[in-house]
Image (cartoon, rainbow, N blue to C red):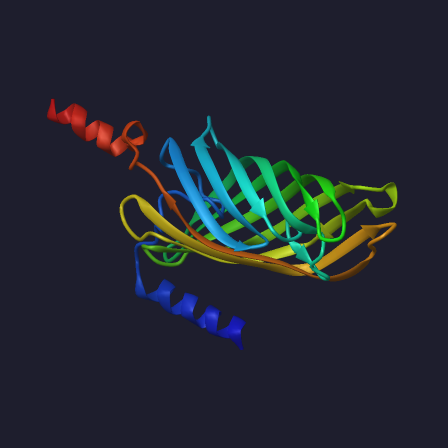
Length: 241
């Protein structure tokens, strides 16, 4: 019922607006950045995240992100007992593959690679070191001049080394995303996503399967920190001179 309601809402928005643009800078989806630098911060489960995005050459964008994790880091896999608290650092590469424009909708597709490391403590152990290699295939759909729907598949493969060789384990979630990005103002784009799918836990002390999920809400912003002003501001200043 919920999925059907979301689908009907998306269809109504698509039919209601002839100009499909969505926010200028996507941080959870597939669209290429328009600004040179974009910041993004959000909170949810299993972590709080800050991302510093940069426009790369050609179809490539890149970012560095930091996580405060209080769950299974990449995605929470039932039972939720892997990480008690931890600090993560990630690199992000996003390759924009294609843009397909139609009369009522614009679609974008990209590939994401997100390696990372984590230092923290486990719920039932002491020091924990984690390593992650996430692969994603986001798909963005501009359904309104201010709204973009985001879907796609994400695979955050994680391995954890904890005190005692018998407690090392790994996580393999397979996630499908339902998200939205909103063009709120000229320099602000709130976003939300919910990823859900099966999750596999493997290792001597922790093996099995269950549901995996992660969710977060936050906002992307740009052009508000002095020298980080966007290109349109710079162009306007030059024209005035």
